[in-house]
Image 1: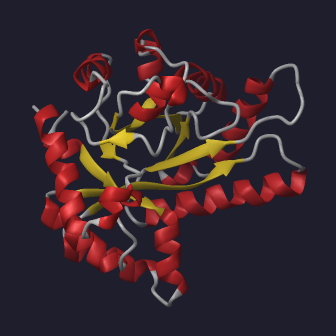
Image 2: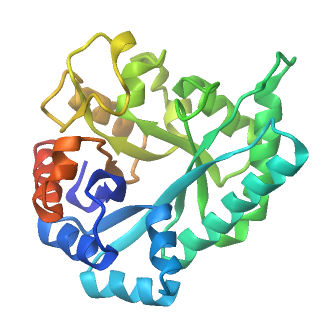
Length: 272
């Protein structure tokens, strides 16, 4: 992992004005940000344009790498699917306008047993991906942000089945710990589909008792062998970003710059 690959996920710090947030991230050491797109939309709801937000990014010295907000609907009623998936398309365009290339998405699941759910998911994801192909944005399926997709293997199968170059997988070390995902799933075939990484550590609690959000701790303060995971990803060719994503009340209670600085400094021991 290199310094140039580090990013901060904006969900990780307290809810403050966007302009303050951006400057605090840069002062803490980060050069790149992954947005909770709800924060961008909240800023636009009070009269700011995307052009003004892009100017804030430039003035802060930060680069947007991508964002997240919602799930792709693969099994809902037709009207529901159209609504949710149109939102994905709009979000991909927003990410592209901000200069990013990654849109992390969750997925739904079937309400009843069907013969080949992964095929249906691949087809829907491919349809949405085709509609955003000209944006340059890659749709990254986050396993465990779903009632159905619970492992790297499953997310990779959906991405592979889509046969779209702008569909990949989001690999989150917290989900790696809390789901059936195992180290041997970090194969060259699966890693080739990983287009973005969320990095964090986990409390030393048995995985089945962990809360995949609340029990995150800063890298190096938990039980994960992050060095081995990172080495395996890079061995098999991963060269994308590593975005720290925390859901820590302690960090949310801190001033934004202080929290971001703690996160940035926790990543440095893992950098070359």
